[in-house]
Image (cartoon, rainbow, N blue to C red; front, side, top):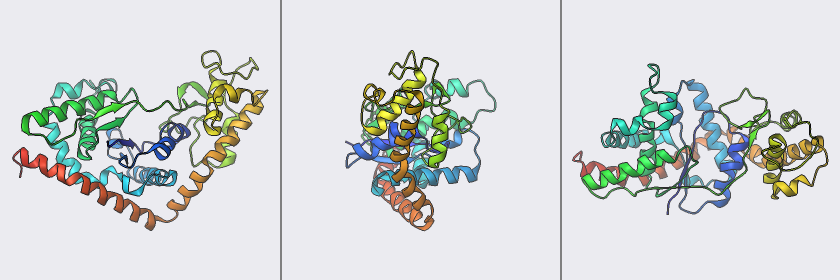
Length: 321
């Protein structure tokens, strides 16, 4: 069983990314699991080349620092040749209607002359990511389930039309992790694409910066430290973060502080200690670009070795070779 997980460099890695995905990838991975930085996906919206390059390096370093196996980690664009070739084959297997029905395109691109064609076709590229690496399990949130379903459809159609080449992947729902909300607005998720929010905690933030963000976290006027996500979302968010970093439940965490100030301080310190080894190791990697490039090249080589047999088989059965 091969699971494939990716992270898009649309912003700096934040606390929600780490507690909700990256930490779990590192601690719960199976020997056949694969991980990648999906920098090509980041191009569906306007981007600055220098920033994209820097964010890709940073996210690759964060995944390595978290403990992801270098053999199982790669950057998407390092397989641009293989992906581009299979992407074209799959685009010729996919109908326009199937691509246009994707919710993300309908919400962000349909009817807008300035929308990039890549926004329409990137679910096909996502299918190429999955099928090229032979993944049969794809851990996704509810917003990505439709894309995995398209990959399943294309794999079945291709296999039926040309011959058995691709595994038909399944979407799997990851084990529930901490639901980290924006500290300044607990009605919304903490997002790396929202860097201007004072409530977003990034994994490379300095400890004093983290403390300031937690001290300014939105709570309420009830002055009751209890876990009530509906009635006290700001307090509940702090308790979820504290619990995730200390290995307890939010209900247990609620008993560790009697005031909001104590809760904010406890949550901040727990986050600082949780992120400390990750931050230190990531900065070490970023300070050694030659070593980082060596590991990246190794990951690209391994990913290419996994991809080539399927790509060649797809070319053969479609008459391209």
